[in-house]
Length: 62
Image (cartoon, rainbow, N blue to C red; front, top):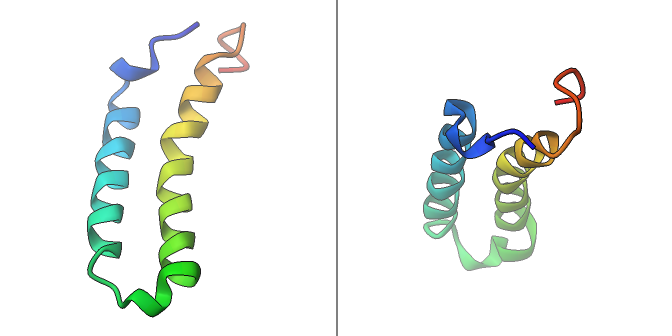
């Protein structure tokens, strides 16, 4: 398994996720199940995909 937490791209993706959540807190509550939910899922998927790729067995698949 690769050490994805040491990758700059993963660290920046985590920063983006935190910033995304902070921004969505300021949006109107009416958007909770629409735009807010979509943005939050989107920003979390980036570091998640990087971590999932780190679990691949070969460097090529990573």
